[in-house]
Length: 269
Length: 305
Image (cartoon, rainbow over all chains, first blue to last red; front, side, top):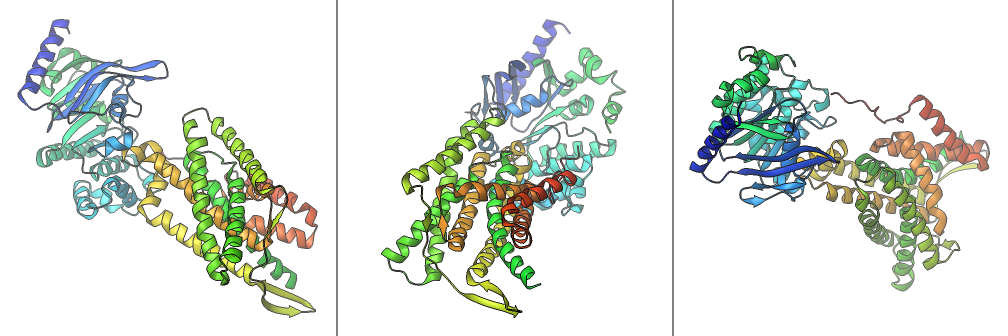
């Protein structure tokens, strides 16, 4: 794709944002380092309220690093991250969670030696468990498998079940902004469909803003309002989900010829 | 048989004290993966706090009820020792978090040296003794002139240990704080992502460990009646051994390890020779670790990915 093409997309993205309110989450010129190695090199990205925004990119592009940088773990070395107009770049991780951002992180990270129920209680911990019963019903309706296994130790569940638990746990904190890091990784096609349906419902019915990192670019771009492409720590392209899906370079790099795409994600299962 | 029962009582008493100290080692190791070498000296400081508090209460304030005095001393010692535990973590360990693995360990050895020398300077180097309290007991049974004796002190030690451990178990297993504590132990970063203040949880872990060591300290001075500035080392190492034997990181393991070490020591002293009781205890540790490298109740380092 030509430089001019990128600029057109960038302009269009700005136009979409200009119509609405200031973005819920705004990332400006963020660079993150592991030691002396730069994982993110001046990333700019916005997530508007009520949107589903997806970030696609290859392994090691820095997608998960960006998710964790939003949470200040690790903190950005330069640049700013704003949430609801407030600079959160130097706010400690646990305080960021308390502002209404939740994450289902890379590798799921359920607490393996706790029961599913306790994992969900941990998700609700920042409200002191005030809405626990009510929210438990909700996430169980969304993920019945989680409800069937409330008293099992989380570490003994299958990868797919752990993934559902990780999302359910994130939902228990009643987030305004939900970050999902590869929710489809390692899941059977039917489960992936279920999870993407759940994401769509959360966005449409509850108005939840969702920032989604995915390798399964086809599904993610179909679902998302807007998308960004991250290559080696830099945003190289952005646009609506449709635009990116139709873009030849995105097709070539991430969709493997378009039609093979849905199966590409399943190869992980 | 008579000797056996008597030694069983003595061993369980001693083991209770080791178990209480061992919890502090095992909890701190569980949450930040560090052996807090100063923990034995925190225990020693609590012995002095208990001794001073007891003398103040009985001689100056003239409180004559032993049970009342004991409860006040227990609360005072737990509170002040907890404060020490909190301050040590804040000053000596927290600034080193994120630096190389050995740094806090070296710092802990420094704190240990500081505490024993500090107490030596302010309290003197000689043994301090405590007036005997709660003497007497019951003779369980007597045969061939050998009386199996259970002193009230031993009852108190085992009783207090059992009650506090039950409360502690409830705290860790059933309360939001306990859940946060276990979450930090399993995945600190994830706990932070869920809004848990990890630093605060670590602080509270030190506070709890120190408070339980203080309970052990109160019971220790009551039982033995003397304490010196160097008394942190040997019980500290024994309790650490107990924690490793039971499986470091495991709370029931710490208590079980404490009881086993206490029992080995008393039985070895009774049936073989008192000089080699420590050798026996450490040999059992070595043998157990050969066959069960993660301790009796420890979990092997395998996690499903």
